[in-house]
Image (cartoon, rainbow, N blue to C red; front, side, top):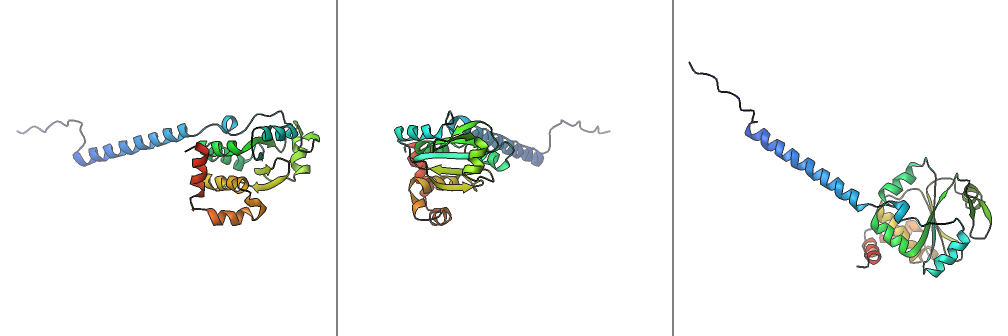
Length: 205
């Protein structure tokens, strides 16, 4: 009488190969996630500058440091688009390098009670500065000011991606706001290699 062969516990050939492929895919995804985590940096530390909320004084600091102006990000705690910008755009080293090269950058809480000194020297709560002075009614708002405290460009909402935000920066840095709208500028420069050149300039390559 022939006894049945004992099972060894090994999977047949094809399933074993499938299992190997799946393990490699999972490992690759984990490595990609780890690389992405390493590639981002906290915008609170690497994008925004520290301030005592005296923007008239910050104008003098911007002049002394050779910046082109000041960038204010108007935000609020429960703003999903603010969170999206911070976790997908403002945490990117190339964005941080380029914008900090050209601007002093500060956040402003549109619901905040902390007093700020405006570019004209007036003192008021953050929420009044946002609503009454600059009519900020949605967040985020990115407002660019020249070295005389004049707002030269304003963008409301989250940008589509890093490239669009980089183009927004170039739009101001190059002074294109004097001649055209950002919408037109974006259509003229998107995909033309301008963003790559901005990144290279920021990183010193």
